Length: 191
Ligand SMILES: [Zn+2]
Image (tube, rainbow, N blue to C red; front, side, top):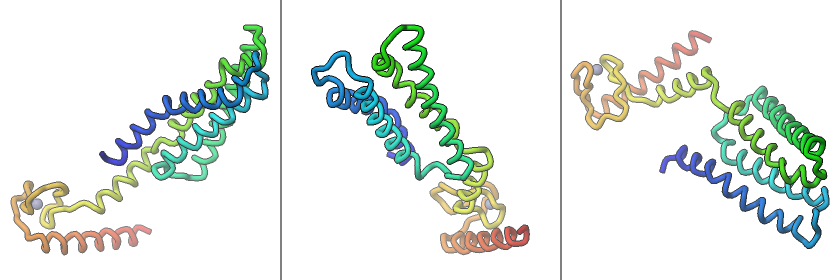
């Protein structure tokens, strides 16, 4: 299993695992004989669940996302907006549906992690420029034909399918090092 497939699998698992955490937290904080629950006990459940979701999601993507200053700032904005959505949702439930604060929070509290996850997906996504930089890095690790520069990465033979020339493995190896030096020279010239 490649790393990205494992990450996607873990991302999909967030929903059932969070449901489990929510159930455990509910039994711990709410279903202790008191009904209706106090607002404080519902807040405790959500704080617990929000902390879990945030930790899980950040751990899952922290090594993939490029943490620029602007991205970190926008992540905080997303967090604030998600909490704001929770406040608005609770207000609507109490005002329009005439529910108690505890019931409102119980009914609409999941809006915060849902908004937060959606927001982070948008903010943490690679920009076109970052994608180009990543592909450049990948190209520098690729194997090119010393004669015609055809990208030979992934081939199982050392004959270039583009120009037909054959090389030994050591010839290819030396040529890649030379190309890397050329690239670095050109980069230095540009800077
Ligand atoms: Zn070639």
